[in-house]
Image 1: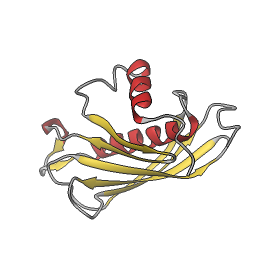
Image 2: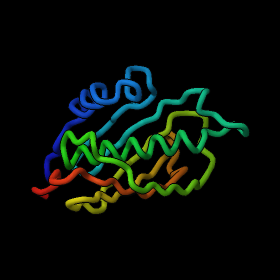
Image 3: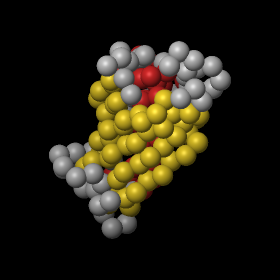
Length: 147
Protein backbone atom coordinates (compact mmCIF):
# COMPACT_ATOMS: atom_id res chain seq x y z
CA UNK A 1 0.00 0.00 0.00
CA UNK A 2 1.43 3.42 -0.91
CA UNK A 3 2.26 5.93 1.79
CA UNK A 4 -0.26 8.79 2.06
CA UNK A 5 0.82 12.03 0.37
CA UNK A 6 -0.15 13.90 3.57
CA UNK A 7 -0.73 12.70 7.12
CA UNK A 8 -3.56 13.83 9.41
CA UNK A 9 -1.53 16.58 11.10
CA UNK A 10 -0.45 18.03 7.75
CA UNK A 11 -4.03 18.01 6.48
CA UNK A 12 -5.30 19.72 9.64
CA UNK A 13 -2.63 22.43 9.24
CA UNK A 14 -3.56 22.94 5.57
CA UNK A 15 -7.28 23.16 6.33
CA UNK A 16 -6.73 25.67 9.14
CA UNK A 17 -4.59 27.85 6.86
CA UNK A 18 -6.73 27.64 3.72
CA UNK A 19 -10.23 27.44 5.27
CA UNK A 20 -10.15 29.14 8.69
CA UNK A 21 -13.85 30.03 8.35
CA UNK A 22 -14.72 26.32 7.96
CA UNK A 23 -12.08 24.31 9.82
CA UNK A 24 -11.11 25.70 13.22
CA UNK A 25 -10.84 24.40 16.79
CA UNK A 26 -14.38 23.67 17.94
CA UNK A 27 -15.91 23.36 14.43
CA UNK A 28 -16.97 19.80 15.21
CA UNK A 29 -14.94 18.08 12.49
CA UNK A 30 -11.87 15.96 13.15
CA UNK A 31 -9.62 13.54 11.28
CA UNK A 32 -9.14 10.16 12.93
CA UNK A 33 -7.14 8.16 10.37
CA UNK A 34 -5.39 8.84 7.08
CA UNK A 35 -4.16 6.00 4.92
CA UNK A 36 -3.55 6.24 1.20
CA UNK A 37 -7.01 6.64 -0.45
CA UNK A 38 -8.75 5.54 2.75
CA UNK A 39 -9.63 7.83 5.66
CA UNK A 40 -11.86 8.11 8.72
CA UNK A 41 -13.27 11.42 9.93
CA UNK A 42 -15.73 12.44 12.64
CA UNK A 43 -18.49 15.01 13.12
CA UNK A 44 -18.92 15.59 16.83
CA UNK A 45 -22.53 15.83 17.94
CA UNK A 46 -24.00 19.27 18.45
CA UNK A 47 -27.61 20.13 19.21
CA UNK A 48 -27.60 22.60 16.28
CA UNK A 49 -27.41 19.67 13.85
CA UNK A 50 -30.69 18.12 15.03
CA UNK A 51 -33.73 18.60 12.81
CA UNK A 52 -37.42 18.23 13.70
CA UNK A 53 -38.09 14.61 14.55
CA UNK A 54 -34.95 14.36 16.67
CA UNK A 55 -32.53 13.15 14.01
CA UNK A 56 -29.30 14.64 12.68
CA UNK A 57 -29.98 16.73 9.59
CA UNK A 58 -29.17 15.68 6.04
CA UNK A 59 -26.98 18.75 5.41
CA UNK A 60 -24.85 17.78 8.42
CA UNK A 61 -24.28 14.33 6.93
CA UNK A 62 -23.53 15.83 3.49
CA UNK A 63 -20.97 18.16 5.07
CA UNK A 64 -19.29 15.20 6.75
CA UNK A 65 -19.22 13.16 3.53
CA UNK A 66 -17.71 16.03 1.54
CA UNK A 67 -15.13 16.63 4.26
CA UNK A 68 -14.21 12.91 4.24
CA UNK A 69 -13.73 12.96 0.47
CA UNK A 70 -11.61 16.11 0.63
CA UNK A 71 -9.34 14.50 3.23
CA UNK A 72 -9.11 11.35 1.07
CA UNK A 73 -8.12 13.45 -1.94
CA UNK A 74 -5.31 15.02 0.10
CA UNK A 75 -4.16 11.52 1.05
CA UNK A 76 -3.37 10.73 -2.60
CA UNK A 77 -2.65 14.13 -4.16
CA UNK A 78 -1.07 16.14 -1.39
CA UNK A 79 -1.91 19.81 -0.73
CA UNK A 80 -4.37 20.69 -3.50
CA UNK A 81 -6.92 23.07 -1.96
CA UNK A 82 -8.23 23.88 -5.47
CA UNK A 83 -9.68 20.38 -5.84
CA UNK A 84 -13.46 20.75 -5.98
CA UNK A 85 -16.54 18.56 -5.61
CA UNK A 86 -18.24 17.98 -8.95
CA UNK A 87 -20.78 15.44 -7.75
CA UNK A 88 -22.12 14.17 -4.45
CA UNK A 89 -24.94 11.64 -4.24
CA UNK A 90 -26.25 10.58 -0.84
CA UNK A 91 -28.62 7.81 0.17
CA UNK A 92 -30.03 8.14 3.67
CA UNK A 93 -30.39 4.59 4.96
CA UNK A 94 -31.60 4.93 8.55
CA UNK A 95 -32.13 7.52 11.26
CA UNK A 96 -28.85 8.41 13.00
CA UNK A 97 -28.76 8.58 16.76
CA UNK A 98 -28.10 11.75 18.73
CA UNK A 99 -24.35 11.32 18.88
CA UNK A 100 -21.17 11.62 16.88
CA UNK A 101 -21.13 10.59 13.23
CA UNK A 102 -18.14 8.71 11.84
CA UNK A 103 -17.39 8.57 8.11
CA UNK A 104 -15.13 6.14 6.27
CA UNK A 105 -14.09 7.34 2.81
CA UNK A 106 -12.45 5.12 0.21
CA UNK A 107 -11.27 6.32 -3.20
CA UNK A 108 -12.34 4.01 -6.00
CA UNK A 109 -10.56 5.67 -8.93
CA UNK A 110 -7.78 8.23 -9.00
CA UNK A 111 -7.41 9.67 -12.49
CA UNK A 112 -5.56 12.60 -13.97
CA UNK A 113 -8.56 14.95 -13.71
CA UNK A 114 -11.17 13.15 -11.60
CA UNK A 115 -11.15 11.29 -8.30
CA UNK A 116 -14.14 9.06 -7.50
CA UNK A 117 -14.91 7.68 -4.07
CA UNK A 118 -17.51 6.43 -1.67
CA UNK A 119 -18.27 7.29 1.93
CA UNK A 120 -20.11 5.26 4.56
CA UNK A 121 -21.47 7.28 7.48
CA UNK A 122 -22.20 5.62 10.82
CA UNK A 123 -23.67 6.68 14.14
CA UNK A 124 -20.86 6.08 16.59
CA UNK A 125 -20.99 2.54 17.95
CA UNK A 126 -23.59 1.29 15.45
CA UNK A 127 -22.63 -1.42 12.94
CA UNK A 128 -24.98 -0.41 10.12
CA UNK A 129 -24.40 2.78 8.10
CA UNK A 130 -26.88 5.65 8.32
CA UNK A 131 -25.91 6.96 4.87
CA UNK A 132 -24.01 5.91 1.75
CA UNK A 133 -22.38 8.51 -0.48
CA UNK A 134 -20.68 8.50 -3.85
CA UNK A 135 -18.70 11.54 -4.85
CA UNK A 136 -16.43 12.89 -7.57
CA UNK A 137 -13.75 15.54 -7.21
CA UNK A 138 -12.21 17.51 -10.06
CA UNK A 139 -8.48 18.08 -9.77
CA UNK A 140 -6.60 21.14 -10.97
CA UNK A 141 -4.54 20.46 -14.12
CA UNK A 142 -1.33 18.45 -13.66
CA UNK A 143 -1.83 17.60 -10.00
CA UNK A 144 -2.07 13.83 -10.48
CA UNK A 145 0.51 13.37 -13.23
CA UNK A 146 2.57 10.95 -11.16
CA UNK A 147 -0.34 8.55 -10.47
